[in-house]
Length: 483
Image 1 (tube, rainbow, N blue to C red):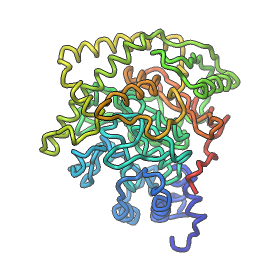
Image 2: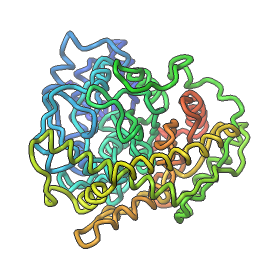
Image 3: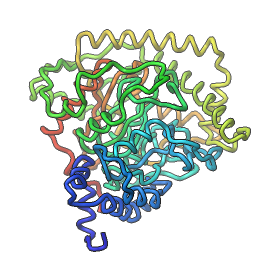
Image 4: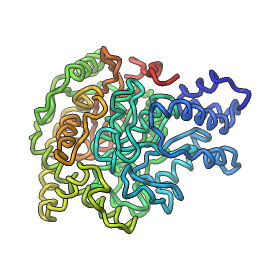
């Protein structure tokens, strides 16, 4: 590695994970070359980004040189995992909160085991908001992550550290999870491809059967569509003891990339179901995507499910608050400490108090109401193959936009629900959905567009995404903080 120039190191940075793995497979480079190149870029760029909050360089270099490195599809490729849900044995798992700052995971999660079996080399852990609550990555514990397109803007959240790292070329892909848009939102903010799989597609064991009643899905944030497909192939499939599984696949997801999508019927809308104002740039992004889809031969018309948006929002928030209260109980058991208000940010504690007031009957009633709305959305997909909307309601806001105070702790929640006006529906229904980076505004900020498909139909999303990627390539775009 010492003989390689900085230009050669940076050349690795803009290859996707599939291309990096091909270099290793053909013996043009060694896994250690890729690892050392990633270390060099993290050390150079992370001080500006604060994307990586825990470095695992010694473990990564040891894995890269080990004869036992698995010969999986991504053998030798550097990867980062988000510091939330996915556990790495013997490594701190803070989940962005002070109460958990000294907790060390006792085992690998099943997802991490599968990532390792795929040959990926885990370089470290990425920043996340406290307990993954907000759609921005500005935890009090670790400080804000900065968007490489504009350091004063949010990366989105809760997988914001992973998105900043991939967008700036620290690694070609990184882990993310999604309970209300937490893969798709930061993908939109950072100009990346982000797909939330179908409920039950990726296991959450051994610690969880499902999370938040099935709202949470695990996957990754990538630059290329083929990486997302191949990574999902590597980690998908039920684990013994799972409460349910996603529908079986007709063939591997990677085979869908480049396959003809057929003539899809796409309903599009730029209006938020809850009546939230939508920024003109986000409207333009949807109109541009709708036009592109029509030019590619799809049937595109303005249409969306008839949803009681305010009812959905209020019900989702109730379930979210109950889940935060539950999360605190889990944290107390893991750390053997009693949670105190000073351990948490004002919004988190306000949600804990809100969640503790929700009775078991109220919680079950909220799910009944939410599932009724899900039925309406499912009926929409009896007519349409895709639902196209903005990913978020505005371009990446300035850092601090989602701040809260002891005096007004719920201000951040109000702003968050306005920002995430579209993504939570797919978490509620369990449907697969993706944010695609087709649009940049006049300020040079990425503005993603959101496609949701029928339950179990990631295949159609991958086929369409690959077609869009070919028609409107985005991989050549480089954010200012990447050199």
